[in-house]
Length: 443
Image (cartoon, rainbow, N blue to C red; front, side, top):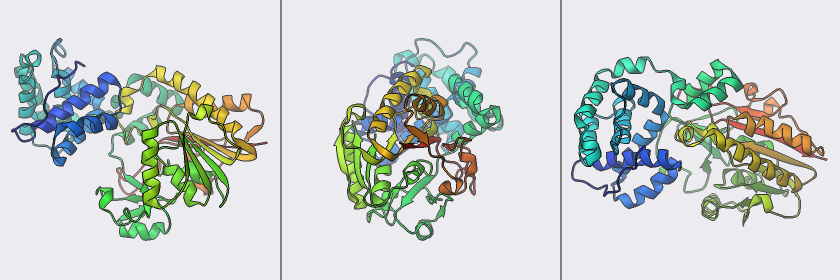
């Protein structure tokens, strides 16, 4: 895409500033590969928008990435000569408008008219306003027909479609993509009394012990937030720390710890936790989270690959990864990661895993986990580790440790959660993130 020219986001036309920011977010994320959350936080600070407009901009951009494959296809199918070249911000503006027309509860006239106004603001795209108007109005007319012909895998890039189909088979690949099309639920890890908090917050106690909320309210205003009774954590992300089975007083290292959900779990279990991460800003967020929760941990800013310390009773390594298991919550991941990223990440993961092993006491437990759907970052990584670290063996995870969810266990006893698993009351209240975790014992 062509970079959208920088400009003020405030404007007298209601809703125009939000649409302008949405198109700029889409363009910037696709062009730079920076995460949508990070890009939004940076751009929204200087945009001077009301919270409602900033929220609308984010919702439009999120919907656009969730359905980017479909959106591109339906636009291209209605452009006889394809997307015009040297057209400036034409493409991101059209993508943002199509996301509103097809997937958001936005008046058609607002989506179309404000897109046309944006196109007029740039001489390169102004020449194509008549074309854009015709295409967008046609999308509005044909919306129902388009929505009845949706193919889930269209909204994943080719390399991910091929990876999932090869690894899990075509039916599961389609199910994964269909789960990604749903808005994610909000899961909480509670300090105690899951049933009580589920009742207070209109939630559901999942088989694994997490609480899933039915509503979509802002968490800061919910009962128990200010008191530190719970924290937001995907149900699958909550499993690795539980599988470490820490006991009160044990020395435990949480490596690549930020933003701290797993650190909080380990501290809540009574462990003496050392949280290690190389990112100072992310560790500041971890400290703030622990302070709200009334929990304690030693916090160390360091590169885990070079971190040295007295060995620990247990070590948890949540390694940097492609994060393809989080696409439902972060749909931009599908479009910002590339196949070549996997090779770089697996090399880093191997170094971190070897270091984690050196930090584990003889007889201690080591859990390696990633929020990735890619076998190279999970099963294959552990196979390679065991071939070069003969002092470690697998400690198979039992079904009862994960609420009886046998479909989330591999034949070797590792955890492999997939986004379409964990059926709930509705599609939106079903599923969890894609995670891999293996528990190892040192000799």
